[in-house]
Structure formats: C-alpha cells, structure tokens
Length: 298
Image (cartoon, rainbow, N blue to C red):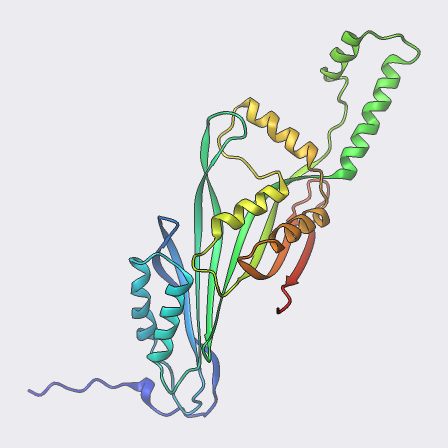
C-alpha cells in the first residue's frame, strides 16, 4: 500500500489575506547555559508573517532551532545564529524574528562579615530581535534590595532627642551614663521604617558585546544601592546590614538616580530603563520611580 502524503494545512492560502506582526510560541521549556550554570528556562520564539496570503508559519522549525540552546553557552552570537535560522527557515514569509528567554540566575553571595554564604535568585530575561539584518539584545534583570526612608529616619532621631531631654533635663551626666542610655530600650524609642524593594532593569546591549554581562551589571547595581538583601547571616552580618541601611537612606527617587548614574557608565549598554518599587511598610501602596536613558550616537 502506498504511503499517503501528509497534508500541510499551513501551506494553504489564507482565507483572509492579512500580514501579522508576530506568530510563534510562548513558554517553551528549555535548558540554557549561562555563566557555567545549566538553568531551567522558558522561551518565547516567533517571527512576523509578512506574506498575508500565507495561512501560517512553520512552528516546528522554530522549536527545533532551539535545540542548540541545550549544549552551547548563551551569548549574543548564539542568539543571532538562532534568529538567523528562524528567518532562513521562513524565507519569503518573514523578515522579523525574536527570541525571549526567561530564567532565574543563581548567584552565591557572601555574608557581609562572617564566612557564611548563600544562594540568591535573580529573575532575568534575555530578548533578541533580528529585522532586516539589524540585530540587538536586551537584558531584563530584577534585583531585590533594602531601603530605609530618610524622612522616617529624621523623625526617629527627633524623638530620640526628645526622649533624651525628658530623661536627663537639667542633669549633669557622665560618659558612662549616656553610653548606657543609648544602649537601652528606653533610649532608642523610635526606629525608621524600612522595606524590601525591587529594581527592574531593562538594558540594551552594545553591538560589540560578545558575552552576556549579567554578573557585572548585577554587581554594579548592588554596589550603587549599597543595601543588597542577604542570604545566610550571623548577628555580626545583621548589624553590618543595619549599618549599611543607616548609611544609605533613600527614597525611591534616590534609588532610581543611583542606579541610572552607575549603569550609564557601563560600556556594555547603549540604553536603559530603570524602575524601582519600594513596597512601603508605612503605607498600603508602593512608591515607584523610573528613569530612562539612551546613549547619543557618536
């Protein structure tokens, strides 16, 4: 018996001729190799359907093109290669291709003082686009940190001053008495409010970049903020963290400016969009600030 030819419905003409901006798949499970780590990820892969008469694209060709991600370290060159394969396999149908990879980068971070260390999770997305030979890569990184309100700190200091006046008005004090008062619960009657905060970085890479500078960008951002959240800690680390917060009081506006200023100095990026969210412990709403920048063409 002769084998039947399987029908290719996607090759049929469209009943309504109309080009489509993007067609593809979202949430494709795939492993990726980043900075020596094999990470679980999901991918969104697609192309434009510029031929409005075509019924659809060949999604299986996109899926199979992703197999290289399993064995080759992720880099701009690899992303370009995959997108080129997307378009080559849809010659005459598509002129634009995109690939987004979503994963969690795991970094082992040392404690501030003690020899302890622990793993931190940084959600990242790597987005690549290719259109008429124009290629670019964008990185999206989420970085948690701590923020202490400058206004709250000033108000707390004022209350501590008032408590000192109430406790020692018109008294002659010895150094030891003042030191004991400062270390007592009666002395520090108020503390400023702090909250876990989140910085969302959207960065466009320069075309000369050969590797994905995820670690260096995360380090630059955390150094600019000065209050990265911790993993395993001892009391000495917790005290150092309290000191870091006290020396880095910041509104959301301060955090956005710190990050934008620091990241603009990086030669790896040509544009950025910084959005910080302070999940207020005083209010039932969040405080948010955003900053955008693009390097001027030389």
